[in-house]
Length: 115
Length: 111
Image (cartoon, rainbow over all chains, first blue to last red; front, side, top):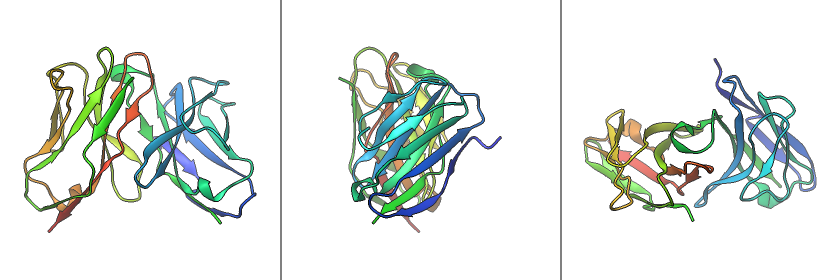
């Protein structure tokens, strides 16, 4: 039982390059989330999904796209990376949203640097 | 709206000291409350939670009590260890909406 895994762990991009971050969970969770973590800002929700084939915008969605083609995978894409997207990205999953059951399980993070 | 406010860090303590990290919240209805911990280089993991007023969550020597009258969920530990050095996040989960995290409090424990 691996929980939530993220690929890659580290990445350096040049401005304008594109990349995809992969998140996978083996807990059969319906809900998946992408956050970014910046110093002094805590966690900010980028996009989330309430089930296979669905996606929704979070607090800071601009410059990112997501897809949830399979229940266990949630992809985060950067089409044209900018230095402002330098951050640590976390994926999380949960069995439900809201209330006592909303315990989120986090991946180890991806550290992205955009030059 | 819903929000979480926690004390800014960093908090620096000596080993075996008493720890309090303050957390207050604003919410409509009756949310569940959580503390998550993030160790260096890792993702967040659930430390403890409480689902209704006066509930006490506890784990690894940490405790927090859901105080509806003061809208607080302060994290406490009687005797901290160097291994407790981490970032601690308070969070609330409304009954019908997404979880909201505080900005985190970095804790340093000196040997």
